[in-house]
Image 1: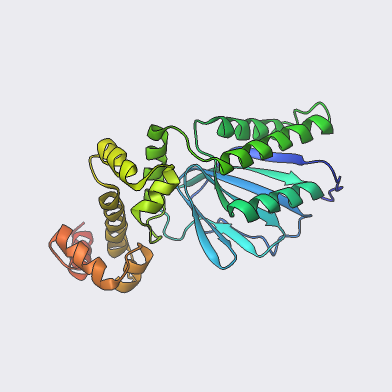
Image 2: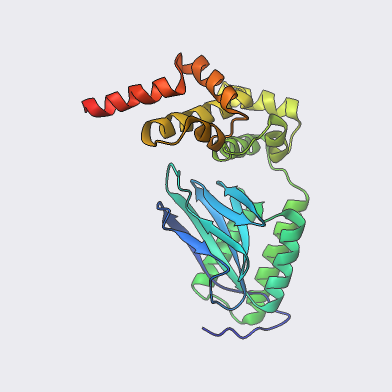
Length: 276
């Protein structure tokens, strides 16, 4: 469908509050799309998705949203090793000014931004989607004003991050759980939560009865056991996919927890499957 560009207006034309995908067949190549230029802002509610942009794969976890421009050299999809459905919401912004402004925001804050749940910016985002999806506008001026308001409020939040410590710790736990593939350090999770490394460790340990580093290690080992049981991937590849620094580190930590090597675990898992 041809879209008439209106310079000076931001246009949120359509959005979906809740969509769920659980198959790698869900895959969009944004270079191959023939649509007129527009912006996609897609926020994860549950699970994780992948957004590939500028030769980097970004994991988009709960409370995070990717920004894509159509058309461009980027793509997004359900992970091949996904553990649960990717549930998300999304909204499209049309208009020449939309593309210009969202490009500026992405250049400033990166292709994946935070829209945490149970916050004013999250409520504003979903209200904008609802109104866009049902065309609840008096006129194009009201639509553009609401889009401007959301854009500026999001910019303000990204410029001055930080919500209450309790909310931050839960978001940080979700961040660690969904970014286990990345070689994260505790100080990076603390920065994500908006507190110092020491304060973050105290709050996290009090909340989950385990340190952030131990929590991340347990998440990685949990995924590793699933890959050992359900795939024939080499152990070295599993170590890489689950965020360990080396094959040797993975083997050492795995033996410490399970009292056996990864290959021994795989053989035992295979025997259990055969006995069923």
